Image 1 (cartoon, rainbow, N blue to C red):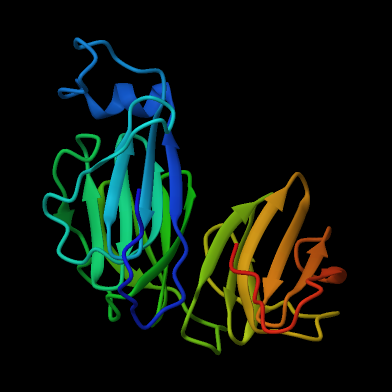
Image 2: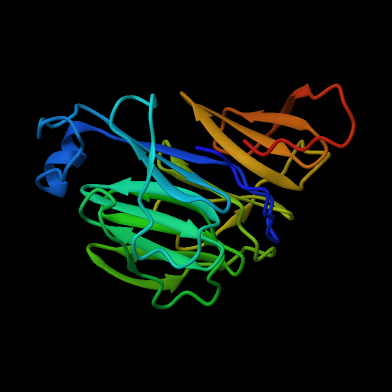
Length: 239
């Protein structure tokens, strides 16, 4: 997918997800994929800044854009829950239940339409936005805020692992139980608390910061240890 030269107000990065066989089955029959009607084992979806969402039926060898119904093409995040695909953009949240054949706006309740990140749990999805964290349950996507304890409203990254929710923001990292009822600041050991990115590897969670530092926690965010610094100035860790 060729990235356009246009820019927006946020630091974008391409978003990539895959649809496993269970998600394909939940989404129903596959449309014309140019493969004689055979169902692929895996579909890849990529979201780009200015190009919207693209899909690959051949493990990334070729791509085609699938933006029917998406009104803002600056994509920040993608997620898959069951047979439903979620896309977060600078101008709203959209869902598809037919593998990207068409999209429907699903941002009722969001006070900010800049949707930057997702975290998914059993029967629940969380959206990190420019206006904080929102939660939806079941198949009714009416979003309710869940920001108690979060000081910085811009939530750039979210993940859930080992029963703990993590949210990254310019004000640091916040953690909560997987119900997201209340958040606790989790920055002990961090010199740079402007956090752009999170990743989980086993029991470890890694955080990337504005100044190029990478931190690791092995105790659900209670303590962080610096494990790397990018050896160039002015480079943030976005992913």
